[in-house]
Picture (cartoon, rainbow, N blue to C red):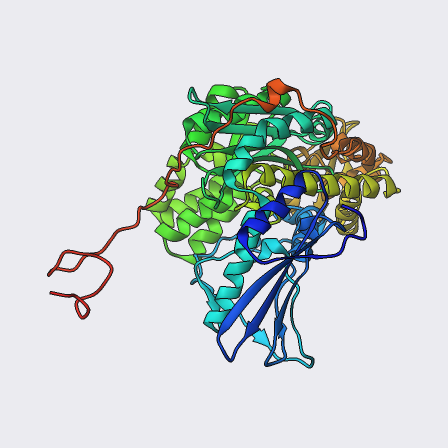
Length: 581
């Protein structure tokens, strides 16, 4: 279609289908125009298609003949971009509050709260000057969800019409599975080193898909070896679960590694996920994997990553404790026990918990202290005590949870393309040897170090204490990068005692930091770009003809809904007053 092609007005479904088929060969813009006559309580929907831009950039307008007003809607595209920036640039997890670059942590920084009451989302029309009611809606922001409220039936009908247009425009869930093999092929061709895996059953039905972009694969060696895995439900026709594997870069920001869509979280799906992940990240004693307490995750890690250290999310542990046990003081002690750096401190707090609440003490022992405490953890988990970075990743992807499978993967690609570009530019602009986040963190410790006194013991050991109190005395070994407070060796960053000893012995504190916190490592982590698929390139017939049928629709895990019946007729759907008997 020529650039100056005038708008086409479509008035029935057949014409609509015909014009949408042009998307295969043309770049189209879909505009939905709703004209309402409140007097007759009738509405009519018109569609206008032009070749100026893609359908995703559409603007929807609604005109009312009898009153003026503007729709107080939301732009999900703006919100999505803000969410992604919060997720990636807002540093990460709140674990040890490193996202705040060394600010003093609060007691409630990772404390869970009980599930709040359901909040209802209201949709209303606000009055304003003029003759038009303008809807500035991104097409992906019009989903229907339980709990939404509308001022009128007309408002709900308007949203349903817009939703119908989007289902037509974005393609059916079945089309997504059909085009999945071709999409994965194009992504691999555009992004060298990218790893994909599509698994179907004997009938050609979809089971699992795994995707790790080459930029993430080649960037992972330059960040700490702590992987956080998690899963979140999808809400499309065929449900499923999105699995993620993430890490944290040297600037305390989220580093995405791999994604997968599976039918549900069970032994087979998690085993398949970790088998593919192992192709990118080999099993190693220096590797740590953090997750929730899902039994299938634990089983898969033991089978696929027997050498790696496994830790559980303390947030989920705290949430279980809140649901089972009472007492704020005891809960505070559990948090302190989980975060202890020294064994003596943990032992004292754990004994105090046993004296106050024996049942809770037993529960914590059964939860395995090697999984949830820092001091007993067999590997190195740095500052990552929770799976919060996975939750932060799920937030900007929430808009894609109801799309077809190719759209989900493409949403991930678009997000990571932008993130890698922004972080690459930011990493190159950092003038310091260490990353910006580490510099700010250490600056706070340098200030605190001025309050300490120091005394040399020998060539390797230095005594550091606060004032004249012996209970605050710590011994630092700068050669082995250790301190009796244990923070130095756990975080791989110099503690306040090590900074004091380093300044006294004329040792550069930069040399005492792990290389993962170096700005050069950060640049290397984001060195490669994530490219979009080149749809102009031909797809081999063997790929295009590869079958991938939709999976069986299966119920998500959880308590099934119960149909309540009445005693007289034993039928559901009404109460005793409306019963026909």
